Amino acid sequence: MNAITVNGRSYKTPVRPVVVACIDGCDPEYYDEAIARGLLPNVARFRAEGFYAEADCVIPSFTNPNNLSIVTGAPPAVHGICGNFFLDPDTGEEVMMNDPRFLRSGSILAAFSQRGAKVVVITAKDKLRRLLGHGLKGGVCFSAEKAHEATLAENGIEGVPELVGRQTPDVYSAALSEFVFEAGVHLLKTDPPQLMYLSTTDYVQHKHAPGDPASDRFYRALDAYFGALEELGAIVALTADHGMNPKNTAEGRPNVIFLAPLLDEWLGAGKARVILPITDPYVAHHGALGSFATAYLPRDADAAALAGRLRALEGMELVLTRGEGCARFELPEDRMGDLILLGNQRKVLGTSAANHDLSQLDEPLRSHGGLAEQRVPLLLNRPCPDLPEDRALRNFDVFDLAMNYAR
Picture 1: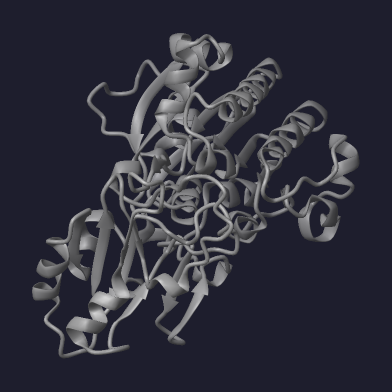
Picture 2: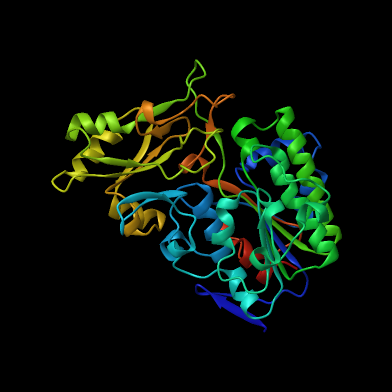
């Protein structure tokens, strides 16, 4: 087993453990700001002695499409996951995209496990576990959120809290992401796999900007885990699913364009349908408000004309027809609406005010989804001397760099 080809790319078999981590919501500024104050010695050393670049994530810059792009090495047009939430064209229902039946390609993790490699996948939230673990043969795959429920039959491991020495954390906590790394370090130390994928939650980043005491504490904890993984002999590769930006008015309220009332006025009540792909079960920190939306229009609507009207709204960065948007962002056309809309760096998109429960937002809104959150870090603890200098990098190149270029 010298190399395996997955979705058109060849990946060399690791000669030492490869740990790839997706730090959810990790805008490059979190590293830059903390390194400038000497808070992240391991990240600083990786940047100085290993490899560092800023890469583009998948648009929409949300969790599910980017995690699946990272583990498949391909864009959503290939793997099919274009949001956390979508309108299923087969049923006409709005559903979560967390069922493996929505996947259209296999992953790097599954391919190596099926050829006998030992693979470990640990996610923060359980919503990703089934997607990331699909096709895994004989590996370990569990979430920090449901760590206490893990079984040998379902997850390839049991008694996780006892092994890690921590109880299952609250889903709305920094501890959920720290549990992911605590478990990863434990497994690398006691039963090292060839491939390990770790995926965190952006609870901290939604609430705290770079330089805030809470984000400092969180990133210092992560930095220690990065160092521990390296000390155990792993190639450590770090990226993110998206960045993060404040999305508030001068008065501190969410800065929203509510799309449904506008489309109702222009087309008639209930004629159009707005889908917000950021939607998931964990909306306390963002209220289902992000900077990407897709709209389904009645058959007789003039999509190009409506795109022009929407494009003229203050804070709207981009409005494209389905064909234009899917071609530009490599999205599956059958899973997107007639229009694809992106808010700018300071604006989020919603359906109507009544559909968003913002009562649980206890901090000014920080969110993501658009082009302003597309740049993310791509960091390895080892150099990649043979990587072409002019190569345009995506976050889903991280396994390629870790397995084919890291020295």
